[in-house]
Length: 117
Length: 115
Image 1 (cartoon, each protein chain N blue to C red):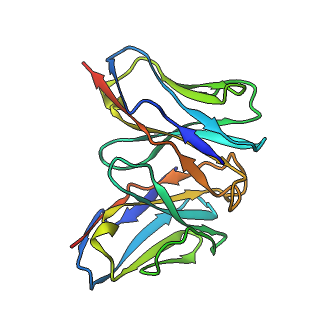
Image 2 (image 1 turned 60 degrees about the vertical axis):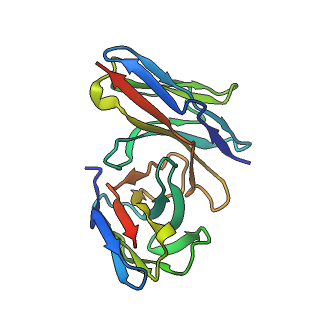
């Protein structure tokens, strides 16, 4: 069965430092997409970054990069130069040819990140 | 522009009330989604519309009734809800939902409280 695992319920980091949020996944499908979302206390889910299963290079978007290790089935999010506004819940998610087709996005349990001044 | 809007932001309703949640996107997306999120949990998929047709219903109770009047609008009609239905309801849209690259963009959500 397809599954996303985030083993860090909470993390903290000092402002301006880098932090890595862990995500491992399990799927037998060859074609899938991996996503990271940020959810501040306001509730909105903000799309951060995407990695395709066939992508050779790790995805980057500004201060966000995705450390994709396909053989280990991991897709860790790296945030460089943390800012106070990065304090939020972060969800790793996977999409693929599950029951119902590509429409279904499955989420991990989330990691709450606190950035300290 | 990756904006999905939802109204209202907050809703308090009694168990006998009928209310509706609204979602709108103007990105030309053809897939739209409703999710339910309880506190400190990930979102749970409720419904998916693809090209204005209901394609996925995740065994949601009939007191929740989705409607997709056109490709830009998605409604969720609520009737005879229970207190345990109190949650954040998130709407999302994506290009067409057919590929694993299809990114879902979420709205700000409606915080629903059922008394």
